[in-house]
Amino acid sequence: MDLSRDLDVPRAHHDLGGVSRYACRPIDTGKHELTAFDKQVDAIVSTLRAKGLMTVDELRRGIEALPEAEYHSLSYYERWLRSIVATLVRKGVITLDELQAVMK
Amino acid sequence: MIFGPGEPVRVVDDWPETRGPAHIRTPHYVRGRSGRVVRVLGWFPNPSDIAFGRHAPIRTLYHVAFPQRPIWNEGREGDEILIEIFEHWLEPEAG
Image (cartoon, rainbow over all chains, first blue to last red; front, side, top):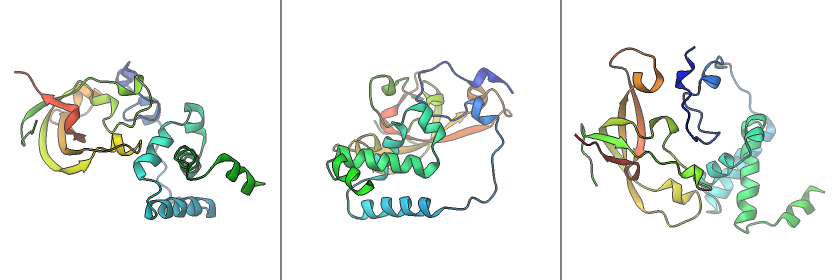
């Protein structure tokens, strides 16, 4: 594998296109079963979009804002959930106190 | 600036992610690269603004083709990479 493609540029950590470190891994083309958690998170985003409380672009921005270590260790839908919470708190749709109260 | 099919363009060599929070749809590996407009894909509110809940002006979205080998250092002569790029990331290719 030619590593010369890893450009010495200040790319964001999620901007992975062509980065050989990732290109070297074989792609898992097996069937991925969605968990109940995955489906719930997906449904939350659909509901928030329908209510005009959050856009897909905000969702993506929130995922990209995750610290690099977490970005790579969280599952796909765990990243979504982190972005949903951060976005809704930032926009004042929910408060951290409300979130903590329902999680008790 | 409106570009037509076949027009040579250059992607702006800009790195907004170094200046603070940003949502960017232009991949790092085409910044500063030369390509060719293939087609206009349509007109959309700028996702970089929607992502922050700001007023999002309508921007033209293009399909731009780049020769693959200078970017990936692999592939055959004539191979291309086709990418969706918004107008504010493109400038006319000099010469």
